[in-house]
Image 1 (cartoon, rainbow, N blue to C red):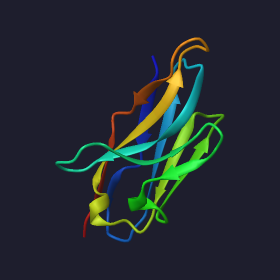
Image 2 (image 1 turned 120 degrees about the horizontal axis):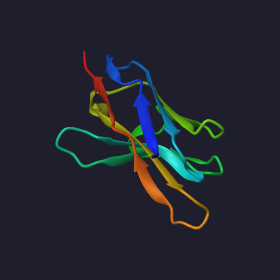
Image 3 (image 1 turned 120 degrees about the vertical axis):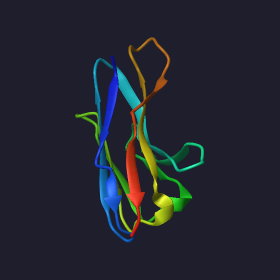
Image 4 (image 1 turned 90 degrees about the horizontal axis):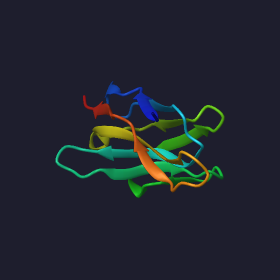
Length: 121
């Protein structure tokens, strides 16, 4: 079974920094995009950042200039460094990977369980 496990969430003061990690384990043939989504209180899940198979990053407007995504392709791991954090960044952050189990199957989205990030003084 494919499993995504996030870590690094917690409580941080406004203006602070935090780094999230996500590792994919289990049998998977390949992963294309890998990144992060978040869901704040009373809100729907929204895109935050991801990195393509070719190493090209993409960011939501709300986090541009403050968040940085990196990816270790050999280890199937993705990181999200969050700086200059704001209270509105408070959310459950979910790791996402688009992968396929074999070269003849379609790509599907795989999700982690989520990790809580709370920005508060």
